[in-house]
Length: 202
Image (cartoon, rainbow, N blue to C red; front, side):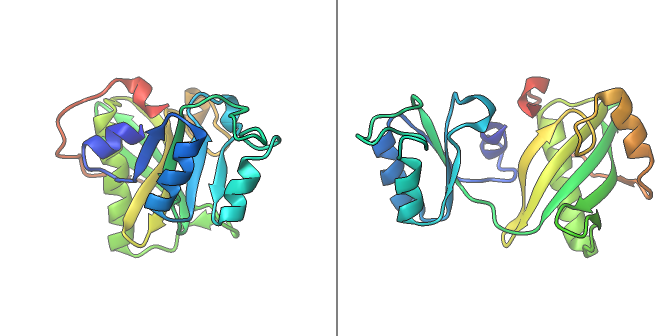
């Protein structure tokens, strides 16, 4: 998903794939901290870490982190290094019908959870960013759940799934969940015209 977004200039986040543990440290020095590091092929996010300090990187390198004490990887590379997204987080529920994306609700994920207290410009930017991703992914029908971080440079997408709700209900249940959220808003279609396979959502 990140490559698809970056390639099309939507919700751009710096990310780099490196082959070895040693290259992780070099890339972190270039990117600056905080940043997220994780093995590309790790199941269930094992080995992912938020690195805010050199001490965090050292802990990640310990045997119960990602790499062995001798610096060899306990989890094999390649690894990714990605900018950490800082800012309030929001869940965006959408329902797509014939390629038209309807935003059923934007919900703040921090306590107290509830409808997001956003200005119209911020809400509009979030809706447009989510719609652009769904267009690029070729999502033509059904619900989707997108997690967005409102950074100081604008909304950035953390993840998107072709289902609805924080509990990741299957699509049939997701439609019902979206229907309970009041005031659905049409999201503008992206001007991007190159579709990508639906697998890009995952």
